[in-house]
Length: 422
Image 1 (cartoon, rainbow, N blue to C red):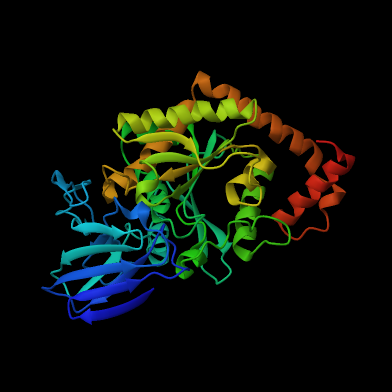
Image 2 (cartoon, rainbow, N blue to C red):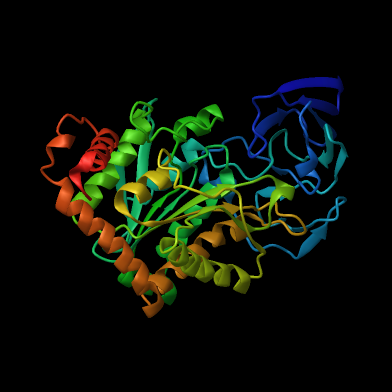
């Protein structure tokens, strides 16, 4: 981003080619008591910002949990772009309600600030420091097992949170595979908050299922505002980050634990989709039906919460086995759906508590489905893949040269393709 200040209360933000429109943020200082006009300009198309209402927080530390303090909203506010947003007077992050898409290349907002320093973003950010403090703070929780998976390329800790017994039907909920997509991380964090709560629904799910929740898959990508690990789960392209995740899940499966469903969370630009849509869902003859069955359970939960859903799928075809969820599915058999969450959805936006609550919806949908009669065909299909792999994988000489799980699974697949059988 580049910044120009033609007048004291007027900021021009130049958005270059490397700024990702799915997630961005910056800080302004010296704005206490000022009404500031901010113009975003770029050579790229901003048409998906027509319904965007950026958010701001009068805060200095994005790692401090207090920065994300939430309370009940006070009804709704109608914005100049026609969108209804929650009144966030009892929260720390607020919507900018005076916005206008001037042209395909210019977007403007006007806001009065009361504090000297403010963070401005297209959606509530989820920082590496906050994720580290949040997951570390769960270590004494009786319902959460914080798993130290390893370290990223730059030495950031990689953590997963296990809730429930590992011998039960198991669901992975992962955010931040595309590291500039903050909604996905808040959704995952919200799943944790619900599952460690004291409601009867949370207690029941903890007894019947196992959840492995990962709020942030790629902390290095968050720090650099880049998508780094997509594509890093293939031999020759692996990184310290992808190897750590792959090793953890291979050890999990090799220890005999279940791995039944993977919900990978992403998010989109404002006008692009409603609150829930799909980026990818399995579509083969048998597994596609199973994926649609559990997706129907998810949609039912979202609709009961009065959230909007679109069945449109961004891409289809073979499972993307060089990416996190696809790698898990292609090697260990869980059903994969990649979802798009959109707190800046057209017509109605979600505040932070509503966004976090989407995590609850995913856990209830998956848990109730997998432990019902309707979920048994899915569990059986995953068992068949796991059994075939177990019978062929262990003590297989083809995997001996491997130094990590990504290499080992690639060598194993090559061996099967050459006639080793599966």
